[in-house]
Length: 479
Image 1: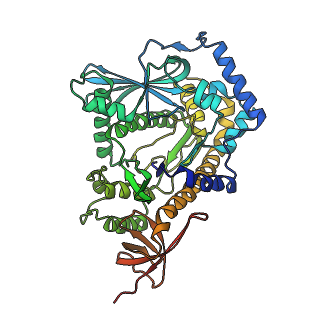
Image 2 (image 1 turned 60 degrees about the vertical axis):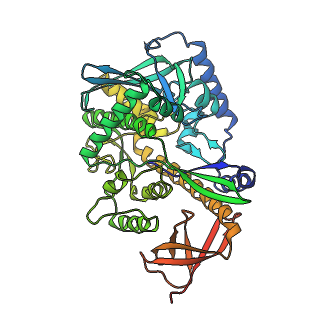
Image 3 (image 1 turned 90 degrees about the vertical axis):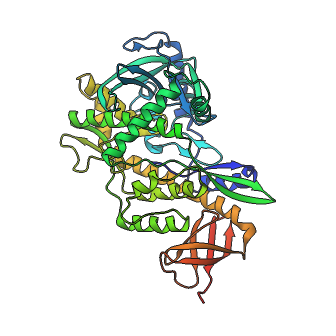
């Protein structure tokens, strides 16, 4: 689910050493062992040598796939093509065939099990796979033949899934697009009704309506910018573009189709999540108050989220904090009887991770499982052997990534606040010792008098230490 992202706008020089310190302390390194690197380079070379030999793959290089990612991305997991099909749509989604480059039981395989996920830091990316694969041979870069799993998803006029096809193929992306560019094309004059931006927006809207009808909810993924201004630093939230939500719906659609294949075949690995904890809902309601977000009596958090304008800074900050509701999510591998909890509460349906194999370990196994089941053959033994431990490995990798993110975020907030020591701020108490500021959108510990959750409070900044990421406020006594 969405997590906070931080971008540096002029603050990299000051913060980069602090981020490097976080990575060193948590043993997160972008450098790979020589044996792992050598295996990755050999796999990349083997594919280049056989790039024009389809073998068991279907040649789909004539399909005009394109990738759509944040500007500057190089680890391109997905490429999409959409066309009208009668009154409905055909969505083709090509996913990087990472298993083609990883030998089960090899050095690279062992390393990816240890890492489990790519770790994103404000200043750099610590990849799951060596860049020779993740940013080159396995990435769906434009004008290059690449191995891929291709999902063909036929939808009816309402956006409901009708049929699913999955096959191994060779694809060739026509262009590397980014979200701002696609959004501009969508909003620009004369956009053709059969152009990708228009079709993506149509399908995304229909899938969002399907999500609402199921009782699901999607969060935008605000990006938090550290901006140099007036001799100091400021923290700002930037909302995602609408086209990002449309693109996310294609990934969700694919993950739901994958989960149905796994459940029908009685083997796989699902991404599950229980309903939101009432205590988290209460905390989020207090944060809504701090950020002046209206939460009507009787409204669900989904109702509130869908009613927000994510371009408003306070709404973007609220969406970032709303990720607290998505706790308890797990990756659950199974063979035989499906798990009792097989659905993801935010999606309101069974769901599996299969669309980001360059960045998540579990997707490699999900893709191989779905393909074997779809083709009516036995799931590979190396996949079956991994299923019992995949959930634990992914959970460990996710915890580490979250801790890196938390510590980096702490240092960002400290650098923003350090020039304001001794100043007062307005906020709302979230807990007896925690406050949410109105501006900047910071959550921090607060000493002094015990706070009453939900109360408006005035606090004084007493500590902002960039080296440790420590931020502490003191409540001003009520008169």
